[in-house]
Image (cartoon, rainbow, N blue to C red; front, side):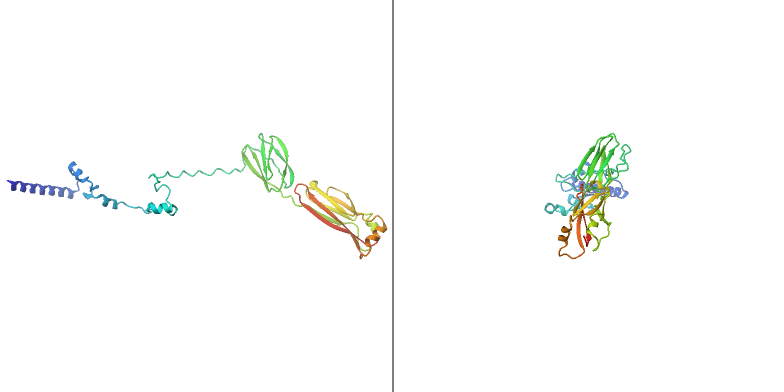
Length: 299
């Protein structure tokens, strides 16, 4: 009786294997019953490959994970902690200390528009002839205050008014109205120059009396803004201011023939008496010095 049961069991097992093979060959899915699934989920197993009808061990399955080296980098924690800068991770790929991936970087906003001062609601003063080291008049035609910024600081010009501002060595200044600014160029203020023009002939035959009676030199101070210049003429001379920047100079060295004789004693002819012209810009402090002399040989 026992042998009969064993034969039946073997026949049933063979039929079961035959049916499974036929179904597998035809491509049908194998539905494992709950008992079989429970067995496959034991700790020694992990995953069921239904395509190949195999159970894959956890350790073996871990080896099948595809690794993208263009996105990930495997380093030891010790090496990373010693020199994290050696392994700079791309943003958003590697987790932080909490095991979380950092959020993506914020979007880059477009740069703010460049303030060119071309605001149709603002009126800039026209025909501005700004000059260095000069008192410049600036008009504010707007209904809001205007702020003038120079190297010396800021000056406020009330609406609908004009103010005189001293500009130093700036190449540009900035005008601002209602938060809108615009730069304006400043013209260079060159240093003054001194020019001498001889009016009377001077040599070893020229007489002192002639030089002390007539104009010997015309001195011209060349500058675009002579009104802010201080001119001094020093020496044994007298001078007369002809215009704002022109001076006539006459020798005034000897009051008598004896003083003349004392002056020329032991000196070779022709003789001379010099004078100096110094010009100072009262705003910039620029200073120019010119020198010349009267030449004579007789009383």
